[in-house]
Image (cartoon, rainbow, N blue to C red; front, side, top):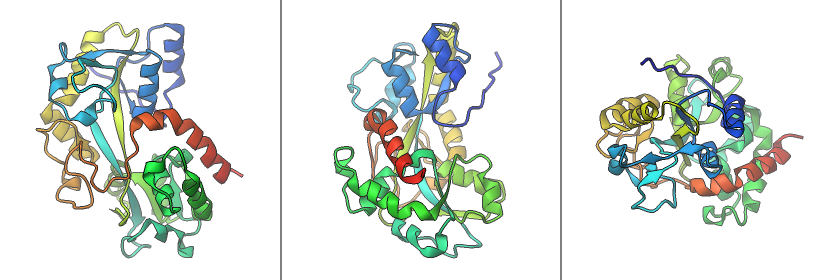
Length: 300
């Protein structure tokens, strides 16, 4: 059977999927590949079919990070599986920025005023802002005063709050000099011929995970499980994550070349060395609130 991929841009699930799930109708897709937060929210609503070790033995072989945080180590099933870990980086235009920034605080340099891009809602940047504002990552979410304070400082530097499709043109025109991106996006810009390099400033960076899950009401659930199991095979993980610049969750898959031998990044999916890590479970509970607070700072 031929596999057809439907493209959707953004972290929110497409309306056609959410409306079908809400109505109890056949979903428009058999497998969803999305960010972990909407996947885990779907799981909370009971919208995911279970992925069982009995049906998918590969689930027993994966790193702990493949499972939602908080899941028992001896769990026999999961509503979602995380196929890789993505690290955020600071991408910069080689023809404008002559050397990598050593600190995230260098983003406040007046020469970068109006030349920085973040993701919509500040996604992924909260722990960095928290630390640069003088706070501690461990205080997220109880006390994020430092985070919002730093975003106030950063506001004049940011000209774009957008996803990455089409951003290569603004970079090529030098409308943007710097962008906070998932490494996957930075590698794609370079592959598109934009003179982009990337760095991780000394304070460290943040991470995220994507998810694979099968929506409730899928009539071909067995085939869907085969697709997910295929994506988790070590050889497939290795090839896929090499293209993405992401850390595979199968221990037998080689670390991709973009992440290899880097002292500033983890060496495997369960490692958080150099990462200002916020668990996905906290993002699920608070991301909507954080996006609203970010909007109050940036959308005036």
